[in-house]
Length: 153
Image (cartoon, rainbow, N blue to C red; front, side):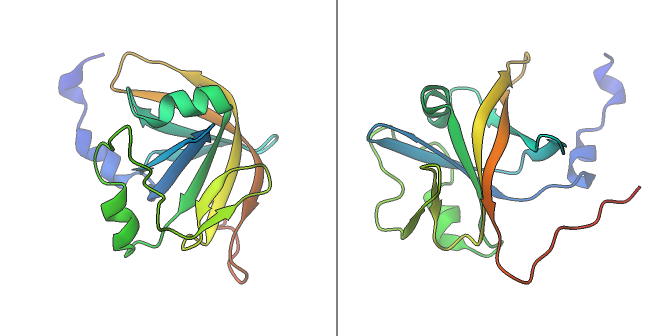
């Protein structure tokens, strides 16, 4: 591939959002903010999420075989500060936050209206600075009055 023909600014034109990816195993729990989430299948419902290599959440996803994606409000400064940058391995970033215990054991801050619980369906490890995790959606919630965006054909 000829990198001279690739403009990295193209990524800013692709659909993105801000998601809080959380995982826990045993007494350890952590999370990170990521814009890299995309649906990849309707039947079954599958999502992809891209996670930086070496992130604290990776072994928790691997060991628990689960992860949760929550959607904080764009102006939520608490979660933005709490999950900005690399977290210390001994810190529990959820201390002091009101958390929802989800149907399959996942965690989502109560301040996030939308959440999706996923069972790990696989992962890809391309030669890049991120790994891609594939999640089978097993439960979700969104505030009443909001519906799915229609896809353009």
